[in-house]
Image (cartoon, rainbow over all chains, first blue to last red; front, top):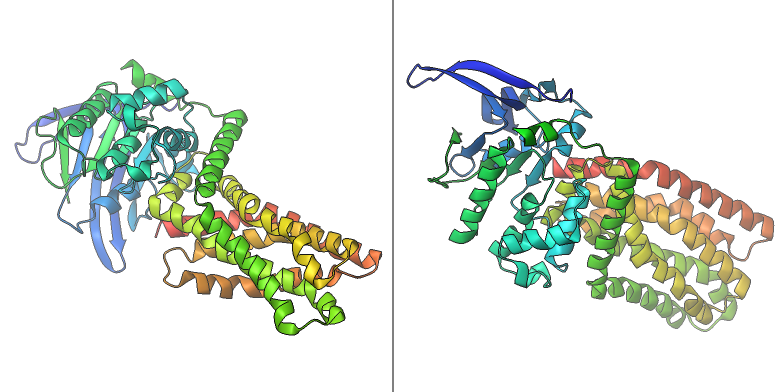
Length: 231
Length: 238
């Protein structure tokens, strides 16, 4: 329980100069973060607080560093400057282990073996993430996103969108981690699947979790309480 | 906000869940590789054909063949191993599985060891199993064959792990397979000398050679998974 870090702090909106009070469970804090590729700085001096109950969309043009920033949040890209805190503690060396236990990462490739079926892929993804799941809940999650019928086929035979959906079904399983980092989750999804994912994200956030995702355009106009970070 | 209270204390993951996770990864990797068994069979056939070609090229001189046999089989096994290994990492790297492994709460070296073990079971054990057939054209006796196979069983895991370090290092490099061979082949010299050299020697020499190889195998199993893990981290964080 020592990990709980309920914070409440006041910020001033830079547009309207109004004072706001933010309260939530502290998750990620970025302090003066800078990322660079070679000699070029993609991001410099970025400060961000991700609290439980928040959804952040990282947006920006192609090559602006959306994916790189998300990878840095997951510990997959070294910081050029600054630091990242997890629940108020600096992440150095083995500290990442603690984050990884409570974090779900979905890269732009769905991390699936093309010749295995969706339930096997899901079970493997969950096992790797340290999440134990029952076979019945795997089936239920796949049915929830509309893949129940196709579950026996190797995912290599599914379409791009269906493969992505099969990977995202992991988030619908019981015991999903608190922080979701999703790279371009809406790409290749049809309208129904987009709605399913949005509902999933909103339910997660309402329960106190946090979601950070990258997307180009204005995905999720209907999304209540979406915060945008433009790079 | 009850849910967040549950999350706030991260679930404890004991040793049992780690074993279960490793077992799941083992099963899924074995299944996935087995479904691409045409690729596996290519490595087995390569081994078979290379070893079978030598007697044809060298000519039917029983004594010469008997002396050459162990060396030829060893070199062919080394090449077949290195040929089949890059795919083990390349596929996982491209489809993002390696990322998930790096992000796993379980120790990466352990996951890598499981991965290399699947390679050993599917790509290397069949090579050892083929040896009795391949000993025929070289006229190797039962005793020589036994020593040869024992040497291969001890030596191939070392080779597999060394190859895994190199395969992880060359991830994303064009013509990585050639680079892999250049990196690993010089390191296989002690294995070749000890393994092929043990065949047809007196019992005490055989024991000495095999003990040294066993020591190398143990050292490799304990030490090299960490090297593989570091190389994989480098590749994923690049």
